[in-house]
Length: 117
Image (cartoon, rainbow, N blue to C red; front, side, top):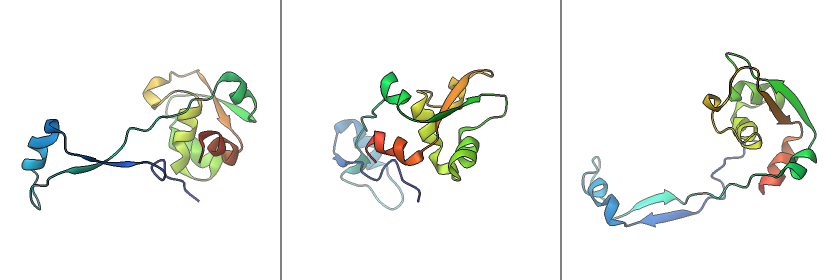
């Protein structure tokens, strides 16, 4: 079961003057009065004690690695790549260098629970 990061996200109507030109020039189909956007999420980052409470395995980052590939290996689904990125506080692969050690939570359900999902 894939869990979207946006499942519990609040949607807001944006009538800000800052976005007025975008609303006016929107084609197709026609100009709109407001934009519906996702509210900026507040992401929770676990502290060291919380991270240590989860069973993890280490993965040494190497050239060619991708988060989605690791998620496929460890969770049987590439859609959970963001769990690995979130857990290691490395939002993109560009934040990693070959030789760095990633900690990968083994129990996906526990990692999702820590996030409140």
